[in-house]
Image (cartoon, rainbow, N blue to C red; front, side, top):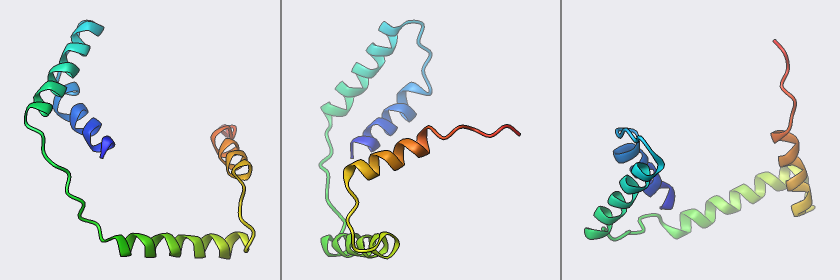
Length: 92
């Protein structure tokens, strides 16, 4: 939900605007926040919780088929993530 808000801010206010200073940018953001807060729209949860739980279970099954029944520790995940982020780029 938060990401949607920032996407809306970016699309409706920031991409169309011209800001000559940080103060101008901050003012545009503050105006957007004030306008959206003036007419708030309630968030209505539309996803079926049973479908979400089923998807999580399928994800666990896939991970178990890949990594076996051992659970991966946070250290394993951090190491794998760090390796993928800091992988040197190949020269073309």
